[in-house]
Image (cartoon, rainbow, N blue to C red; front, side, top):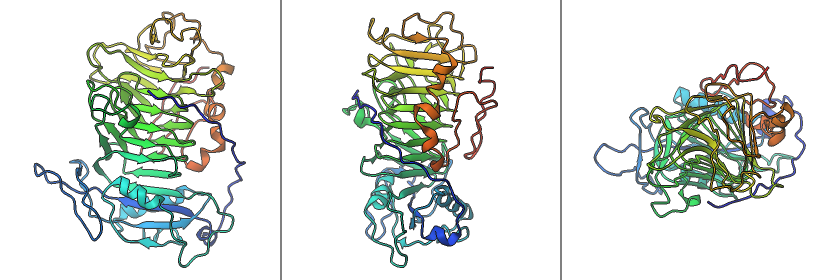
Length: 452
């Protein structure tokens, strides 16, 4: 595993949101949108793709049985920047629901836009198209005071996409928007056993800052006997993944570096299936341990902090950690120390009976046991009892409220300064009564998880 440290960045002061007229929006919007459409593959007839004009044939893109592929339609809309980043997404969703194949914003808001013809038959092609430097708008002046990076929204329609997607550090503010978990599926099968490094095995790798993924499932289907096989690797600062499925076995989610936030996701795996050295908050998620291969132990986290001065760690907040249906009687550990100063906390989370009474597992002998920081606070469920937890000096089974507060969204990733602009719903502090309400195509409410 390759280690990258978290790089703290100065945050510009966020201005207050102001209500502006539609005409002002036309001079203020900066987003780009591309519709990446799956191409249907006939059963038992191999790979096929529709070529149109200059569009290259792309193999192994098939429609799922549950979500038939729509007709090939592509619209690239380029608008100027806005303090209301959800407006583009809302208008697009409304247009998609109506089956509109023309101007996706027409019935919602009168945006200034240009349109580019063509069909992207892979997600990678769509990313390349929208991250290329665009020409200046033909009929509209550049927004005064805009000057920042535009958000590039890639709308990935329902279907199964067999490809490995890479968003580089130079490709900033990219959003992958799907039709929902289990409907839009990006699948790969790279693994260490197949000749790839752990780093290179990712089905989706997002290293550009401002990355957002919503409403899709990312899978590495290599299987439990193939070693490390990453589904999603994230290294861009200010990244958000919400209402997504992330599925693999060993090393499912690589929280590589920088500040990251996960909400309303389903994350499943076996060995070290959430690992890396980002400052990551995982909130309101379903975390499921699957049945491991022979001789393997199920460990939820393997955090990679190598220096006590690094402000990194994994904070699991108000989630559910449970055994998948295939787990059987395999014990599940909350984490083990990949690096000497490994840091993970589990707070306000439901732990089912699959959690091992010891709670935490060694990496190798005494390595890191006195220098790690593992904390538990206000957890519930049959696996939350701490009486039989390991007694290493770095394990804190009864964190104080002040200690727990250090690992909230507000404090650990300074989320109040940047999450509101993404449109994601989140809980800023720890002591919030009630439950986590998630409003993306459904709801998730984790009750009775906040201590009195």
